[in-house]
Image (cartoon, rainbow, N blue to C red; front, side, top):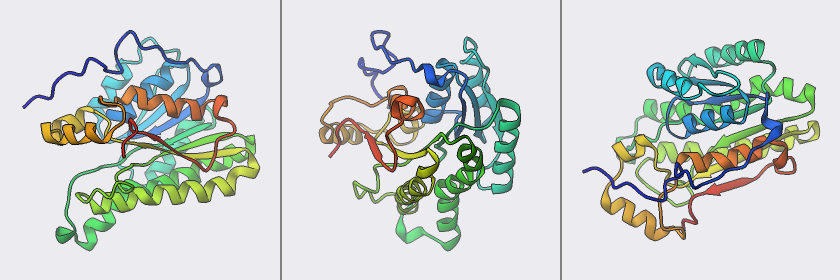
Length: 267
């Protein structure tokens, strides 16, 4: 069954978003930027005039993302790799910085919310959930932080999930990993704060990405979500990205060690 089109889509031409002069020519790295929330982040940063590099496994979708940035001042740079390979991840960050300049904004976004049950969990799958959804966040930070510290500025934005806060029980490995994102944020914000580097978490509620609508959408599920939200409509990737832009720009310069929910006021 095809989900209905919502007239309040964030792609509605009647919506108007802010421009951030401080993001022009700023070097931004996004993990998981080929589709969904990550793609929206790449597109929105590129539209602000930022120099964007992004990492993903989905080469075909990545090319679509790059093509959608045809009018941007800078063409995004793409690295195809598995983020569970930490050596490859850190090498890509080195290569991106060599080509575009030191990374000034890192958005740790890549994750996988495949459903699973506690009864089916194995030690191997547990490790995979943590490696896929949490470990690379820390090691991407490890790679970008020295240049940020030297410059005495930088913004690290970790994309979490409200799922663990809501006690959702259909992906325990994912939920546990996402709860760990806040630990990384608060720890590293304290570590880097004296050097002018900010670290924040942005948590999506149920964001209507193509993947979510194709894999997990149901009439009953959407009805339950909207009942829980104060705003009675879908939340879209492009509007989620606006919070990330604010935190990446100088406008968010006083924000660090914080969680920001973009979930329509979901209880």
